[in-house]
Image (cartoon, rainbow, N blue to C red):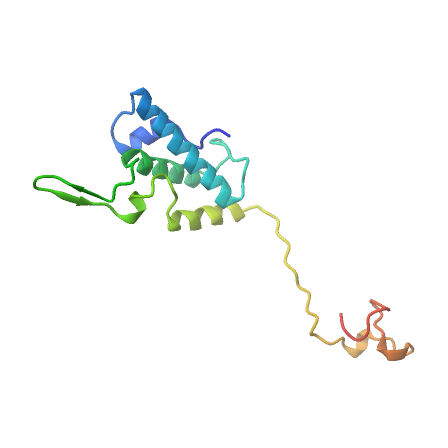
Length: 149
């Protein structure tokens, strides 16, 4: 499946051009990783850049940008006079954050048909649903099942 966003969108997000062949391949790999995770968590395997909600595309760009900015997963950089610590979310490459996963799962639920079981075996059958002429109080709805539905 194609990525949910483009390399140009990632370049705009990070604020610098992605022009070398290695950087373009890295950005495409990060976009593919983020797109597949979004499709997985949303349970929408056929989303494309045109059919996915705009929020999903935005999250894909943000996750891919994190992967492009820190492909090695460094959590700290130290120079002569500077120590730079990264947050945990920026160390995991193009993986989605917990908050992004929650949003994507909510997006995936929109428009889906789900079945919910409403069966309760512990509820007795009301007298109005039993046939008094039948032995052992068989129900009118299910003549083979005794007393409960």
